[in-house]
Image 1: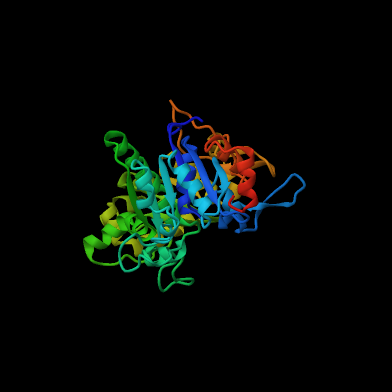
Image 2 (image 1 turned 90 degrees about the vertical axis):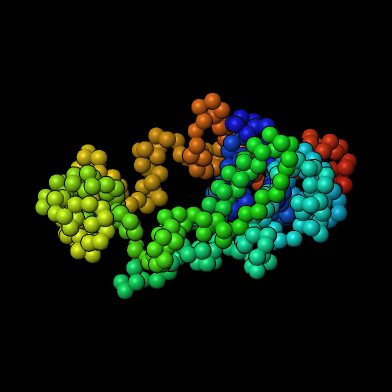
Length: 407
């Protein structure tokens, strides 16, 4: 294994997205990740299609695109955790691991002897990350939590969508499961912080991470806007609550994103747009003034931008270092020369499909480059390998586990 975490081993008991996203990042960074799945079915997201990965004959494989997005770099083993022998196998594996990731309901693993207290008793140095909807404490601790409901409960949907009073107004969720994804990223940060603590002190610990807590935490400036003013921010479509003009604007042939971040950029925009008087008008010359005058200013800007094609604006504004960009479809994203130059798409060997494409990790390490050698695994692809090479079971013992339905 390559990468900065090649010395770490992870037992991944999580499924769906938040936990698997975290373990995929750890795998990208070089950690050995053993993904534990239910025999015969596996992670729920394997069935979350269409679309499904196609084999060489163009037929659907057993794995949905959703599953492929979050499980690169892992080893898949199937173990029935409700079976005492399955529980015993996992406890033996835990002894070899540095990190456990799980996203069962609070207390859900206790009856299997796989909860933090049970694992700590056999491996005091373990870092045990528990991901739930609402955390290990509080009145909602026993509730299940899913991304869309967390976006609603955590305030994100009150900020996302067309402003009230305009056609199409109403709450909208973000187009990807950002509450899950951000929880996965916080999990990675928390796990690595705990690894540093353990390396200094020898002490393992449990990490309590909730989707709702994460969603509230990354409201960022919008949360601070409320805490500072006492007023709940409202939906503003593509516009920014604290910067103007910073939103999608119309061109003669569609829309583009205009992201003026300071007064100098505003003056440059006005020069290109032929709005010279706006740049020096005290009502618009500073960002604070522009935020106050948003309703009067934006229609003036939009009348100007409608006069030219989006490509003209992008060329002229970019040359003047005024931040702007197209609003791309995913087809356009992956055709973009910058995305292609950065090699954002990986192509890996896959046992069922021949080849599979995924999106690479955006981080690049100069001293410990990442090695994307393992495609998202098929269900149970590495069961026998892990049992034989890591738990030192012989062929007869492994065959018995298969026959009994333990693995």
